[in-house]
Image (spheres, rainbow, N blue to C red):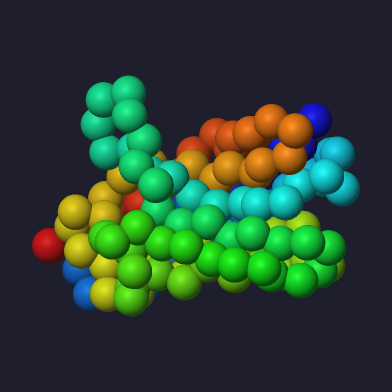
Length: 118
């Protein structure tokens, strides 16, 4: 079982930046991808970004149209941690951000609030 712990959320003004972190622990050896979704309201979550890897090497990244060009996903393999650097934040980026990790199943973090004021 993979456990995920998110950090780095908070309140920021429009145009500002935040960096989210997601540290994985537990049975991480079979994990091959990690990333982020976000939830604004209601039950659905929207895809933000994903980073695929094999061992210490990143094999690919992908972004939603809303995050492309402003957000960057990265990984520190030595810490089993991924990051989401968010720049030029907009009020519509306000959401709860959930980290996920894919191995034999998808594990989710608890979620972290990001609030962007206008």
